[in-house]
Length: 254
Image (cartoon, rainbow, N blue to C red; front, side, top):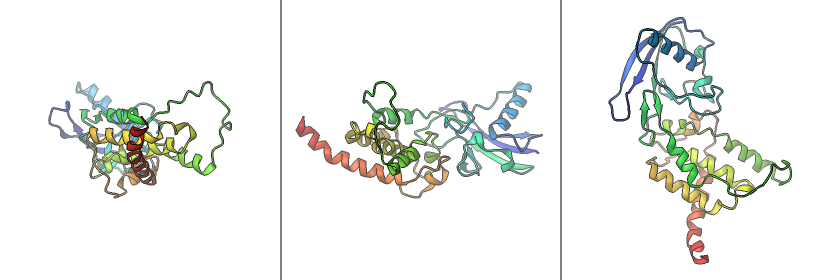
C-alpha cells in the first residue's frame, strides 16, 4: 500500500522545524512502523538526501526508545502498543500519517523525531534506587511479600520510561512516570530504607526539570503502552505528603 507521510524535520534544538511531505510505496501491512520508517530512510539515502533521525533500540516494546507522536497520539492508534510494535495494518492504503516528536520543554528535540529524555534519568537518580547491600542473588521466596503487593509492584515496575505520559498530558506532567517508579519501590521490603526521602527528592527533581503539574485528565494512562494505572499517582501523592511531614522529624533526630 501507499502511505503519505508528513514528518517533522528539525536540525537541532535551536533551529526551527517544519513538516516535510514524503511518500512511501509498497508498504507491507505486516511491517512495523519503524520498518516503514527504515524504508523511507533508504529511499532518502538512495536519493542522496539526509535520512530522518528517530530513536529506537530493542524493537520489542521493552526499551521505551521508540517515541513518536503519530496522528496526534503517542505511539499511534493502537492501545497498549509501542511504536516499534505498531504495524502498518493499522492504516489504510493512501492514508496520510503525521509523525512528530514528543512535545515538552523537558524533552528538547535533539534532531527530527529524537528527543532528549535524560530528565527521566535525573529524576530516577534523585531517589529511584535501592541502596541495600543484598549480597549474592537469593531465593525469590526468602523475603515473604503479600501477593497483592507483589502484583501491584510488578505492574508499576512495568513502566519503560518512554515518555508517552508526558507527551499526552496537556501540562507535560511526568507524574505517572514518577508515580510508577516511587510506587514499585515503596511496596517492596528492599525499597524501605530510602522510602522517607524518595518521593520528596524525585518530585523536587521533576519540578527542576520543568515538567508540569497533574490535573487528573487521565490522558497519561490512556496513552501508556504498558497500561500503568493512575493509582500510582495517588500513591505518589501519599508518599510525598509523608515525606514532607517527616522532614522536620528527621532534622530533629539529626
